Image (cartoon, helix red, strand yellow):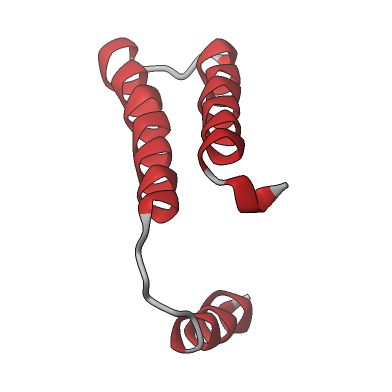
Length: 75
């Protein structure tokens, strides 16, 4: 497990172009928004409901809609 969580990510980081465009920014924003949403319920209610976890689908769907509507090369 240590190998799987350390060596392949390092290889991926070394050979990835670090050109952050709007697509990368959208990915980061959606991931942070979904995380903050789950964290907020966990902080306020001291529990995490299945509905909150299912709400992650809405963030994922919004990202997919953004990707296909703003990037014509994905088709």
